[in-house]
Length: 387
Ligand SMILES: NC(=O)c1ccc[n+]([C@@H]2O[C@H](COP(=O)([O-])OP(=O)(O)OC[C@H]3O[C@@H](n4cnc5c(N)ncnc54)[C@H](O)[C@@H]3O)[C@@H](O)[C@H]2O)c1
Ligand SMILES: [Fe+2]
Image 1 (cartoon, rainbow, N blue to C red):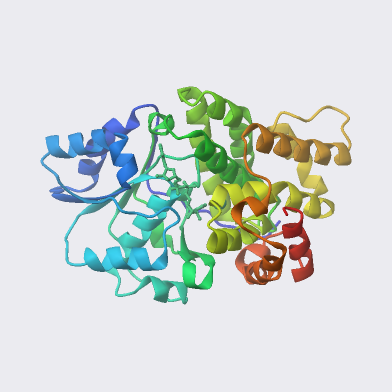
Image 2: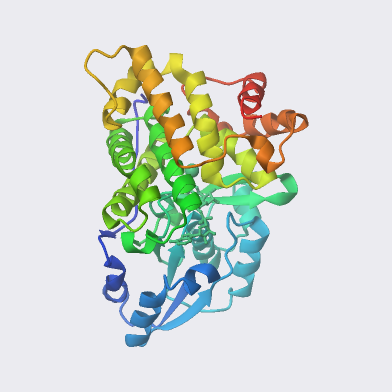
């Protein structure tokens, strides 16, 4: 545990089934004379009808909508810069982002790029935004990255085969709407992968070197909600109750990681996303049991609380039994949720391991949070377990 700790989050959060219906009212409360909104999403989500209510409300209120619907999954630096340039001369009062982490992260960058004289590349190089962006309303449709409550935006750099996180307090949204009805149509593979990503945020925050009295509360509640509902939301996707627990669990996971940070699972997952386009949640799920086994001796005393939150702890369990139960439960989820467990399925070969490990060891920001330090060789061995 660190002695100094911090927490920050979005300005205003609204939850509940059909809460999206409140969007226009909430926007008008925040900006008098709201005239134009930039809607950021993806064609597929618009076609599914996920933005019908947004457009209907904006039209009813006479608010003009400009739409960007071309956000790539796991967006690249170039794609976001191109959109920022294309819309630089447009004027809008608010950004409304409806989508998964890819859309929310893109919207954060578009917001800040619009008001700061800076490029995505300069932000990657460490330059900071100095003024607030266009205010954002974030509506997550996956559960999820928790991006709606984090100051992070993650971009892919294909030429360097990397994914990198950019951090700015100006990325935090003004408004968050957590409406589980928007997540009931999330297909099973995405429900599984994004749900395990959310669990990983909570778990890694709880065992992080930066874990603290803010993050522990959010992490354990996130673990409790997700453990209770991840299988149900996968098997019975239309269950509002399960989807709501996942959405809240994902948000609490985002709050936990904002304060404590993620660790080695995320550090090792990034190169898999950057080079082999393995979806973020899938990469995390694959690594989670192996990195957890590796970390065990440095975090044993943290595990009973995790097992209790997962409802798998029994009176009298030893620390070793508790650890075994946690890893077994994670492996069981991966099996039930049909998450791939073999990097070969994504085209990774033995010859790629050195390069992957060299990329992962550079992600110091996250490796520093890991309860146990890792050498390049240890990272290589962890990747090898997935081949
Ligand atoms: N900012 C953060 O704090 C943070 C944290 C973790 C991950 N991330 C980043 O977020 C991105 C991944 O986000 P994600 O896991 O939410 O996936 P995503 O946004 O890429 O979405 C996955 C797929 O699901 C579709 N989809 C989304 N919602 C849907 C719905 N309700 N119904 C049907 N289809 C739907 C999308 O169109 C996409 O094809 C990655 O780039 C990752 O690195 C960011
Ligand atoms: Fe993540």
